[in-house]
Image (cartoon, rainbow, N blue to C red; front, side):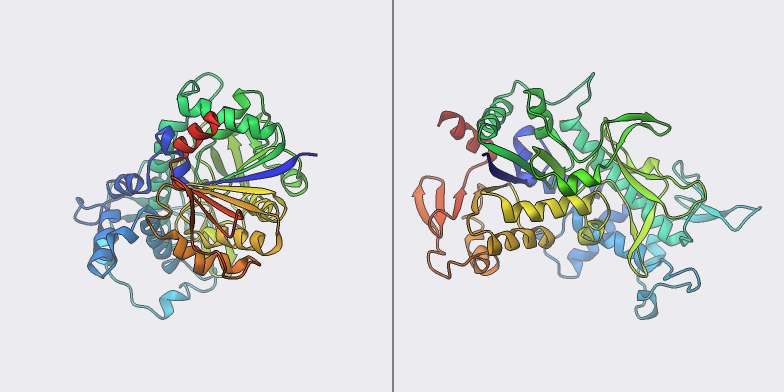
Length: 426
């Protein structure tokens, strides 16, 4: 009987495949999107500077922080519901910076109450569509901005991870790709591979399938439809199948598409998977209310600080449930390049530690000791084990290898590429 090996890949897991770092994505966003009314400064840069001038440390402000601010602005300027013209927030807080931020004008349809936006003021916006779902002009403005920023992220992701039957930028012959494939093939001999990623691509899935290991990605086989060659999420299999080798994107994927399928302009949104990276700005903004009165923009990439709410949308909800289950069932869990900054993910880890006494956790992070993550674990993670406070301090086993609580936790303070090289040698 095969054991169960679970894997959680964070941003640091794909650095050796030339993926952008958090700081790289932040730099891209600071030079992306709409400009404020001076028609020079980007809104993203305006937000970044305002946060710093109000006491935030630059190390704490990144692309997710900026996107979160824009999401909150969209929520502030939304309607609570059709009969109530203002959001709950707008009843209690005074707005700031409207003069600088509102660089748009409204073009109304002379035959109906519908409208579209001109961005910047008085100029045609190539991606403008008539508003749906009773969006306010300002809410729609910020939704367009979010879509554009996420499209830039998708484009950046495609630079290092684009793959189709006819063309691929993935280097299958690189040393790190070969080392990864060799390591996972050795795991595959004795284990079911349950892989989860917080990144927006499918590199590891592609590498394994290229070498004969079938991986279920959460979707049916692709079929040609009126919206292109896409595939629907296979929700029943995600929920029920615990024996397949899987690769699930817990924070969405650049290869996913959000489609509004209702011809009557009612809230009817579905996420599809496709062969190619998708630019969110090509779609009409689609919103849902997971919590009453809070409009959530449904996107193929889940970032910012509304991840828990967006995690309620299929198939992300079912994929996160599968991760929760695997944390409780797995024999070993590899956590690679993850910063432990997403509490909804941390809760899955804590649940697994509390209820799965056989779970062995192996962390790959070159800066784990340097960034004093062992102290963070002592406070946030280790209390969920049943081993008390003994052996919470790191024990150095050898160079770049530490253990906590005996062999329950093992930490490799090397990059993923270095880790794979060592596994290949062993």
